[in-house]
Structure formats: C-alpha cells, structure tokens
Image (cartoon, rainbow, N blue to C red; front, side, top):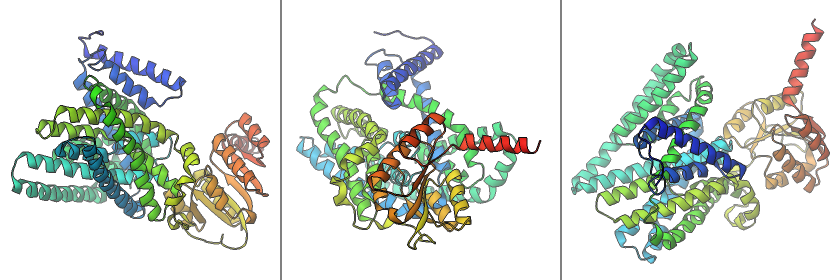
Length: 547
C-alpha cells in the first residue's frame, strides 16, 4: 500500500515530482523520457501506489495535451504538400492495415484464440499511436522530414479507419442491419460538412480574425488553444475523434502567417500536458491479469515490431522510395495504439470478447510501445545495420527521390553541393547561385526542397547522415560540399563518408562552438562556419566602422 492523498492538488504535485525524478534517472541512463513517464504511471496506478484522487483530472489534462499535440501537427502541415505525399500515405496506410489485420488474424487463430477474439486482436494490431510517434519525431526534429511527413500521413489514414471501425461496432451493438448503413452514411455526410465549414472559415473568417487578435500575443495564443480544444470537442461530438478535430483546427490555421509564432509558443505547453497522457496510459495498464498472456503477447509483439515496418518498406519501395526512407517511416508503426486498447475495451463492453483478450492486447501494447520507442530513436543506426538486407525492397532507380529538377546543375561540373536548405542554407545556396556557381541543394524536408526548386536550384531529397546518398553523388564533379546542419555528429558522419568515397574537393561544415570547430578541422573540414559568432563579428565591424 502506498501513500493515499485526499487532496487532488497534492496528488498531482507528487505525480509531477515522481515523473521528474524518473525522467532525470532515465536521462542519466540515456533512456527515452516516454518510458520514464509510462513507468511513473505504472507506479501511481492501482498495481503499486494506487493513487486515484486525481484520476479524472489527469485524464482531462491528458486529453487536452493530445488535442494540443495534434493541433500543432496540423498547424505545420503545408496543404500544398498533400498532393505529393497523399498517394504514398494512402497506399501505405491502407496496405499496412490490410496486411497486419489479415496476417494478425491468422496468427491469433494459430495461438488458439476464438474467431471473434482473433478478429478483435487482428484489428487492434493495425493501429499505431499517432501521439507517441509525433512526439518522438518532434523530439528528433524529423517531423518535417520526408519520412516524417509520410508517416504522419498514413497515421491519419489509420485514425480515419479506426473511427470507421468504432462506428461499425457501435452500429452492430444496436443489432440492426439498417443502423450500420445509416451510421456510415451519417459520418460521411457530417464529415464532409465539417470539412466544408472549416474550409470556408479558412478562406473568409480566420485570416482577418487572426490579424486583429495578433495585436496581443497572449490573446493570439489563448485563441489558438481555445480553437484547438473546441474543434476537438466538436469532432468528438460529431462522432469522430478529438484527434481529428484538433488536427483540422491546426490545418485551418496552417496557411496563415502566424502559424510559426503559435507553434513555437505552444511547444512547452504541449510537452507539459503530454506528460499527463503518458502517466495516464501507464496508470491504466492492468498488470495483475497479464501472466497467462505473456507467450502469445510476445509472438504478436514480434509480428508488430517486424512485420509492420517491413510491409511499409515494401510498399514504399514499390512506389519508388529509397529503402532508407521506407525503413525510417516504417519503424513508426512498430507499436500498437492507445486506440487499440480502447477498441478492445469496447469489444468487452459489447460482450463480443472476454477480459482475457483485453489483457493480451494490453501486454502487446506495453511491449511494442516500449521497444518501438527505441527503434524510432535509434532508427538511423538500425538502418546502417540493415541496409544490405533491405536492398531487396528498393528499385534499381528510386524515382521518387531522384533529383527533382536539374536546373543548371546537370552539366559536367557542380560547383557546390549544399546540405540543409533552411534559412541559413537556402541563403548560402542563393548567394552562390547569384555568383554564377552551379549548386545542388539537398534536404530531407520536401517543403524546403520545393522552395529551393522554385528558386531555380537543382534539388534532391536526402540528408548528410546517409552514406549511401553520398556514394550516389557525382563527387568527382563537385568542387565544394557544404553542410549547414549545426550538429557535430552529422558533420563527422559526412566527413567520414566523403573520405571513404575518396572525395578530393573541399568541405565546409557548420557548428556553434570553437571547440567543435577545432575538432571538425582536425577531422578534415576545410572551412567551419559559426553562424552566430560570424554574425556577431560582422555586427561589431559594422558598428565600429561607422563610429
């Protein structure tokens, strides 16, 4: 028995303190914070400390955190990008759902489950946690990468599928055949009307409204949070999910010039509120009845951890994407979702399955959420080990990731290859091009690639950490290789790959400290950019020269 709190405030304060301690311990052990927070939830749950005074408050804060997270994701979505990642997101999302549910059903039957229970388990295995994946990709700063955008796209497809499945189950609960068709027709009509109303607001109401609200930064942020929570509640009330409503709320503001300001101000709020989601998730895991489910759960977990990523790699490879992009995207579906637990619990409530099936899915959730967190965090290192094996999934010419537009970089010589087309990298690229140099720009963000292409640069998807991409570049025709990513780890990987390929040109990399600059110079960099220090020196020169 643990300490019991009669005051909700004290209990939440104790939860935060426990999460902070476990988070610090996890960080010291180089473990992901998500695992620390889930462990905190397990400890405060009924199996251990049994804190329950703040259950409803924690659940409410978790729901708000989910809404804010999906709102920020929608806020960063470039509507014009949907056409480029839409087909692969749809094909991958539906293909993975079909494969996982079909094969998972057969595995569940082989493990001795009854037909209905096997069907529920198979469906539960198909859904991945949008919340956890978006959080991990955001922490790794890969949410805007090509594989990150594709992953978010097929996760949205999964969310739509799970909403439809839950509608079907609810209709079956009414035991009326006509109710099923009516429910599906209803959700289609309401969904279309919902999107249409938001589109009208995007076009005529929200832009001028935000212009007025932006006179006060605090009021702008309050409106953004209120808009996210309100559309989340409306989406839930209309028969969709809170996630869908919050995501559409973000999309509705994504085309305004205030989206970066709102997203930046909401990041800390998002991280704080998501802490309660992970605590709530851990607290609701019933570990008391899980012993008999360990063996079948491990079999199903291996299937989710291995089978789901492989089917994504196969589909994306068939569509012309490189195996590296396919694996990085595929690893995001190597776990089941909180929706899987909700869906299975609904089946128990409807009398379709027993509590033992819910226990089985719960164990699979614990195993896959825990292990997939590490797979996603260390996805680049994992690819380095599996690159040769995955070659079978890649076309000889991965057309989706070739140079997007040759521009003037097609002749026999390229003056500079620039990795990173953000504000700093794009300015360098434009400056070099304005002086007559032929530049090839490379970035893993398709939006940055598109903008550079519109500026007349030759572009290509990719990043400086990919040795295979380096090997495919025409290095014998390149004078300069420039990396504008201020990560010393990325710079070292790039320098090693260039040396391995026998590159004879010059290399420029970027960092923020003098110590790192000295280290990179020793590793072979010809020039090291220090943007902040260089800009400060120029500012001092301008001030002193004009004095």
